[in-house]
Image 1: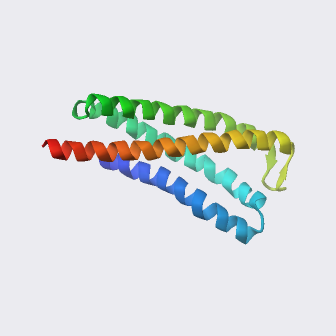
Image 2: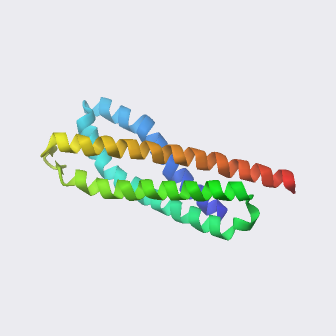
Length: 152
């Protein structure tokens, strides 16, 4: 279970990090605009949200199955992180279709740019919070493994 969780996390969080830090800037440069890159990102973020959902599902199963091996505070922290990650994902899943309605990928147009960018700004902030919660989860998970090794 823990291997599946780590692979799912690496796929989601690592993919998210690589896409945001490398693919988006390079794509914007090659395509000539961040707007054109945004039409690609619109499709990719559907898959990032699916990967996040899978990761959070594995995280919840791991929390349940391995709750007895975690310390009280570590368990509370990881449960809080799982809830935070879930709330971010629900928010992103709510916002994404609202942005989708405002864009035409085939025509590369946005029907209401002011509304789109208002929603997009919120989407980016929630994504940033989700990414940060993922980083904290990873640190907590690794510290939990380290503590378990020291105790055995």
